[in-house]
Length: 190
Image (cartoon, rainbow, N blue to C red; front, side, top):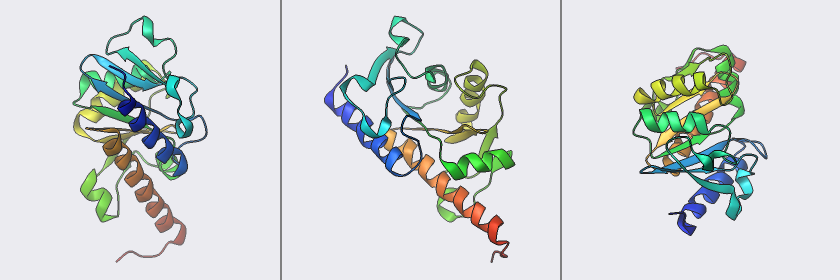
């Protein structure tokens, strides 16, 4: 079922994640679900420069196709199994990660973030990267929220499309930047 259209959607969102500064050269991962198939970025791929072999088709349940998939596959699978997600974006945006280090939830000040997703939970598993505990926590949190953040690791956002999930990550990063500006300036809000 792997098609050029799927690769192009991955390339577009991967490029936008990298060019917006939401990931480092080899950071983050994205996926899409179609029935029992999951398409996910390859382990170690550069999302800003995805090639033909950088998107791997696997299954919703563990199988022999998993070896080269992003190590966050365990998290993506759990989110798909627990929620209505059709696509997932995971990134490492600076302001969002900083906020996760100082807050248990992110409460936006800006109208767009309030409208798009409202309060965002910050989750603190013992191991944040590719752990079953992180997968379980995110699966539960994303039943009720479009986006949740793993403390020190970054947001996971779900959507009907990669673009919708990326929009949540992008809007959250801007919201966190606004919160940081408020804190840094100490100015009273009106």
